[in-house]
Image (tube, helix red, strand yellow):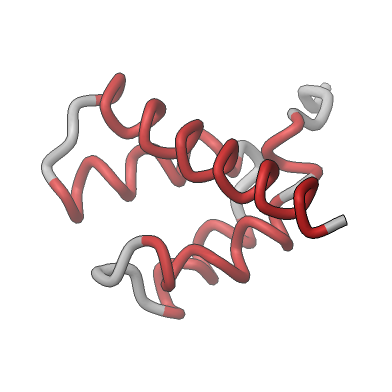
Length: 78
């Protein structure tokens, strides 16, 4: 049985479109691997750990911070 989609999975296309802007070490081939993953958030966290040397917690905090800033900017822009 598959796990239900997380909020991250549901917003992946939006998040993906900004990923290379937010993290310059990420390449299209990295993102394509995540496109195919069942658990996109877990895979993305692992990718940030590998590319940037983050701990798992640092990677998750980085994702949360970027997403919150993006969300707030969209909200302000209306």
